[in-house]
Length: 426
Image (cartoon, rainbow, N blue to C red; front, side):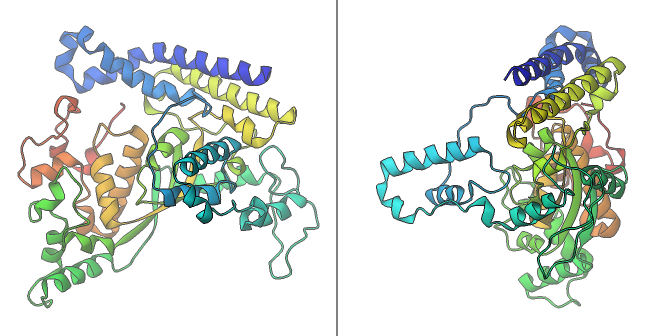
């Protein structure tokens, strides 16, 4: 407990230190974007503090306490209960789900006959594979790895796996090499996305190719100037006849985000990803994402690196004391890198980009969205041309004011910029 608490205190100390140190670079970036506001800097201190705090939170642990309201249907709760012992569900989550079920049964005891026992972890494919891998020493849970043995017991119908001495590091290096410096890399798409989209538009309208060319068909589905439904404050694209055609094109990306950004990214439930077994992505080496604002100040970068290194030292110390990976990982900082693959149809990806290409969006998710929109433009230019932030969509639709954010205007006329010109620090 002393090791855990000492590490927590260190992380919160680093957070407060970074909040203070980041004020200067945050102010510089803020007034570069809002030069007129520099005449009265005292009026904007609170906005600058928020920017500094948002970045400083990267060094806080996932153990940081929070309150929330969570509204779900009874059916969803029954599913929660059924899967609450699978990877990566921690004991804490099992306890919370159990209490939620108790509350449900207290109000509606008839649900008890529908309640199934949780699926045992030992019955899952992940557990079966990882148990076999641990026997050979090649893919043990974080902190249990080692050099692979020469003999590996396997199922008679599977090949014998060969593991490098440090599979976690090898995986990271392989994944990052494949990313090629991007936050998000397009790795899969339908070869006929644009043709299928155009055909589906013609089907909706009952027209042959001779009556409606591909270019015009795609614009009817994607251009807010032709289809005002695309510039509504409410997302109504799933309800329009033409916009439902956007469900057919699909794209797949490999992504690397911080734990902080990934937690936000998961709010987009209609662009699902295959998230990792977290303990298998963490070893004794600090592996983090560094926000752009931190990179702009050498002292901030040093403090950031010291704090994340201290977090890994605390986790490693707990593991040496026999603490399970599940509990040691409560010290994992929000800066920790999460690597995964995400897929989406155009209907839902277009909406996500409309939210996340806004300069007010979380920085990492914004960078990932810029990466994605640029790459889609390269393979499907007629589609990619309309993956745009809300201000540009409203401008194309002729709506005013162009920026829908009001007092939260980002400070830049983004609707006048080409995607290749997008750049930001905060």
